[in-house]
Length: 461
Image (cartoon, rainbow, N blue to C red; front, side, top):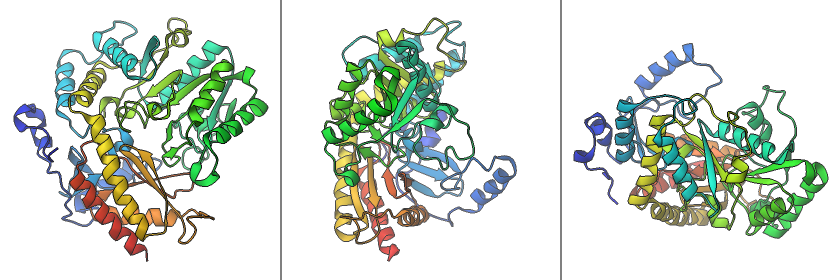
């Protein structure tokens, strides 16, 4: 793979400028620069203070794995819009498909006069989500909306009320999903009262609890049986790799054991693949890594490369439980977003991006292991594909106390930003540094970022 992965002659005239963004970092001003500072002043006057930014640099162009701000600084993007631009910024097929669709139909509302693009996205989801049974989908706008609809469908199908989630989970910012989140601040503090009948079960956290998959599953199931009661439980919603929780990878066998219990008790088990899906982990859906076939799958973020689109996909008999008119929404499955999503599926297949995710995992984890040999604040390295994290602890505590070190994460994120690398934090205690690059991130760029990360760790001393 080369840095300039789209031939300019294949790119529509509208996107040639974006395609010209060089795939390398460059800092030419202070960060943020003068033009970004001017825009920040304008923003402060008119944008709610509740809408914050990790780094107040204002992006003018983006391509592949690089962001360029209004001051000409270029950043290696290890956030990808929190997992949205998995196939890269301004990918040619997506730009072309969305541009063409925008010339034909911008909106009709599928529930009034339908169109083929919506149907094609549902076909692709049926083909690529786990399970070889008949599946159906509903398309919506965002991840939180997908969670809401998944819960609604499960309740309709089972006739039950209760919803269960796992510790350290994150599911969104709507009223129901705020109730489903593990961490209150910043997502839910002061915004209640929240939806009821939501229960938080203990999870599997191998680095901290030391439990096998069977042991952790028995603990979770024991809670669900005793505190909720299987006969009242509509669904269990689980991220196969937890996102905001710190890219938690459960112990082997944990997820299949939960699915076995759910199936035996008529509980709908829902995979929240909003961050982990769409090729990010080296499989179309992270559930595949764990031998888990969920009843419903939630897709968003990477499905349309930046256009707003999300979906609930699952067993046809569950998806058909809703009465006609019970599902839908004004903008859900917009034609332009659907055209973009179709192009995303094509891009993954035709450009071998599942293998690229596995390449990124190999290069990145090898580099992080080298750093762990030098810096004992790195307690754990975990994840799959282009969804990798390191958990930082206080020096000397990695083996026993494992004291969370959020200050180190904050310092590293700030240091890297000044050097032109965008990292994100995560974790219940804010002590996880996550790496969420697009699948266009080359080995050369990863090694460059690892060099910056090495310097950032050294600066902690």
